[in-house]
Image (cartoon, rainbow, N blue to C red; front, side):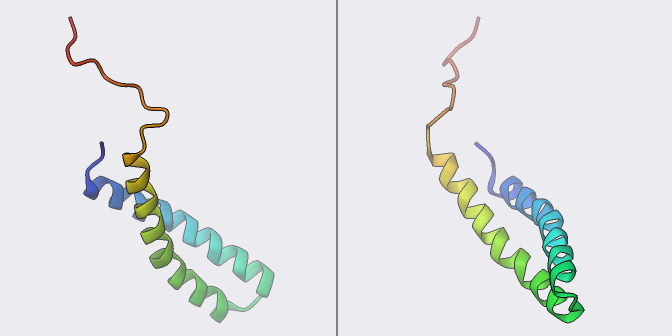
Length: 73
């Protein structure tokens, strides 16, 4: 299981790339720098929270996990 700090750090690093992409797509479509900056600033705060919650939920789901043996020889 991951620590909360690791999950938060992953979320932040992921959102940097994601927010830059959102900013560039918004700018390319709208051609409005002010709008692209506004969306680029709001985007990481919303999505960091969503990513963190998503990770914590998935840590509680056993689907696809391999159970580690209680002992090894």
